[in-house]
Length: 111
Image (cartoon, rainbow, N blue to C red):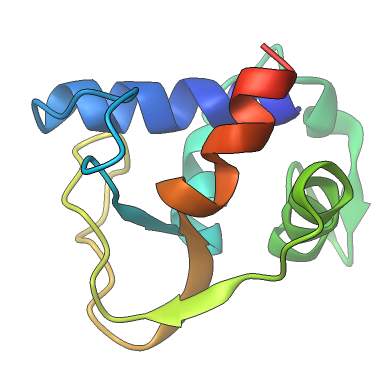
């Protein structure tokens, strides 16, 4: 799952012409955006997870997985980067998620 989250950050960075490995290429993705993109993958192991009446990845579980790798809690931001990987407009309200800079070290450790 953490590898799939890394792939999302790579794809969004590439879509926005940002070099994933440069420290100045820092961008924010909300937990909701991560959930929407993860749930587009019908082969993902998270498709069997259940939260209430729905199946698939859910924000609380994504947050827990990221915290287990990084030790970091999600941030709040209104600055989510644009992406066409979801079928909805990007969130502009105060949402919870992660900056790439918060995850970069763990991404490198667990490639």
